[in-house]
Length: 197
Image 1 (spheres, rainbow, N blue to C red):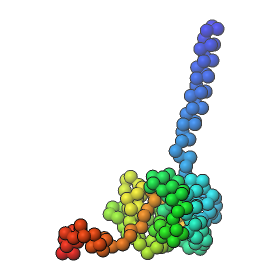
Image 2: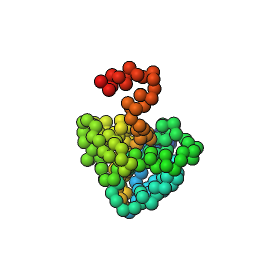
Image 3: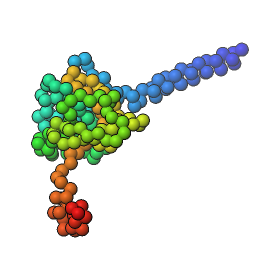
Image 4: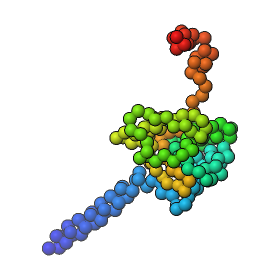
């Protein structure tokens, strides 16, 4: 009888440890979900979330804090710190970029209207004009929402002046005209001739 009490005690302790470990394990990746405070602007969400510390630095340096806190209805495709790392961009890279370059990059992540995930068309990429005047391409399928082929890892983070979609990589605005770039390189003369034809 004494033996069975020891076995029961051991089983009870094992069960307690297992439940504790399960509770900690189930809190892993989902804890990065961002839930903004009520009436928080896009700037508030970015500034008050440690997962956006690199984006915060970029937004402040680019002089876009007031814009993204202002009236309007914006959609921001926001790279978190992991997205900057996945893109090979460090905090010192942000410090070394000019405010104008950062502004161009950040405006490429911003639409002047609110586009929730439910409004992203399924199927072929749909072009949307950014605040910076360039096109980005949105699509949605069974795997989720994508912008320029990059996955949205958390959609529809609400803000008082729009919506934020957290993305897995930094989007780089297109630069220049492909034909003009190719024409400047004499090694691509056959390609230029084919494209022009």
